[in-house]
Amino acid sequence: MTHTHVAGAIHGDVTTRGPVWLQPPSDVNQLVDHLWSSEVTKTADGELSVAGVTVSDLAARVGTPALVVDEADLRSRARSFVDAFTGWDVFYAGKSFLSVAIATWVADEGLFLDVCSGGELAVALRAGVDPLKIGMHGNNKSDEELHQALDAGVGRLIVDSADEIERLSVIAAERDARPGVLVRVTAGVEAHTHEYIATAREDQKFGIPITGGAALAALLRCHNDEHLNLLGIHSHIGSQIFDAEGFDVAGRRTLRLHAQFAEQTGYEMPEFDMGGGFGIAYTTQDSPATPYELAEQMRHIVESECTSLGVAVPRVSIEPGRAISGPAAFMLYRVGTVKTVPLDGGQARVYIAVDGGMSDNIRTALYGAEYSATLANRRSSAPPVLSRVVGKHCESGDIVVRDEFLPADVRRGDLIAVPASGAYSRSMASNYNHVPRPPVVSVADGKISMLLRRETVEDLLSHDVGQVPWGTEDGPELPGR
Ligand SMILES: Cc1ncc(COP(=O)(O)O)c(C=O)c1O
Image (cartoon, rainbow, N blue to C red; front, top):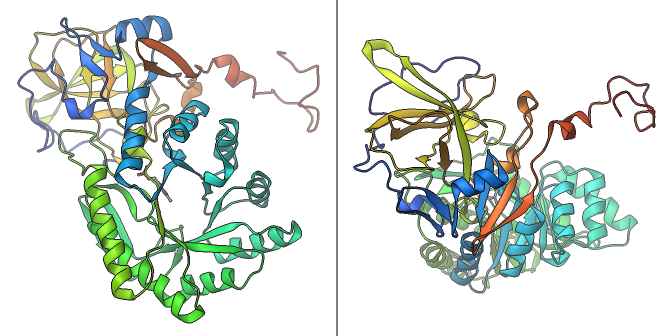
């Protein structure tokens, strides 16, 4: 489902009760527990608190908006993947939410790390992550990024195109290196939420298709290159996957390729990466499988398929991102303007504008993501009304939470918290409208830590050099310095 609507009002989906899945709550103050991180509760007077710190305290000390990470929760989700998938390598997908502290936490908990740009690699290295435990993705890695990966000694490069294989081959030969390589293939399976689609072809920018033989050719090309250490096949089928059905189809197709390659070359590749995409609950409609349930099913898929193909079970890896970072953080906003807008048919919608928006979380505007929200600073006895939480940006699609029942008396100065905001919010944030990006703080055992400081307008202005002759922009006499 997508609601994307560029630069214009969104019409035609209006009712007083919102989408079918959204039920009016019997108590609008009560948290829907499974949407929140483990250390989040509401106090007796209805205030949201995380690991012993109330949101009023957070807002007073850190300001709003702020992305608030529950450290114990994130660590425990990371750990539960390692425990559930014992014997497999769990790469945390850093693209979902990365900072030096987060990279440190997941490494502490025994995870490997997946990065997909030179910038993400730099964060991982600054965090002291063992380069051998880093996998580097990217459909368009620059030569500079390939050199950066080889300089660092990353354990696995996931190559994504024939062109990249040629460039990596030349670079590795120049350096007399032999990087570990997985070939990202497309298996003609696309999974989203409860559904997956299996087709013969994939029309997308990632990976090399199995259909038509391009993936096999890429594997052979790597295998025959003395400067590339071919480790295996990589396949990632999508996001917000709630069960193992899509993995089943993709697993069978990719393992068949693995076996075909072994038969042709006599070489059984030692590894096999099944990608990420494990779903989380953003709203009451979502009920994802646990890592333990998924692990059991995915293990069965790999083992039974390898047995029937007559190949050894390779060392398997997975790459969960949002399932670790998403539920572990909430976004805290301060309410500004509240408007009730009359709609066709005598109905009305409450628009609650907060002090952030699409610059700190683009997912709703970008692809119609659904979120939930709660009034965070107090209990209310007002009835629930269907509300829309919107941002402060100059775009009518600047929506944070499309549909939620919130108390009818939400007013300027209140705090609104949006659960499951850890993944792909900060990592996709922008400075639209020259709005500085909010800070990221973590809370554990009653203490607040700063992970990423709040940007300032000065930070933004520091990039704007006015207009100076090219090559002098770092000179000492710039206007405004
Ligand atoms: C190759 C790969 N691995 C892992 C992930 C992580 O996905 P998720 O955060 O949904 O688990 C992605 C997401 O785009 C990806 O492209």
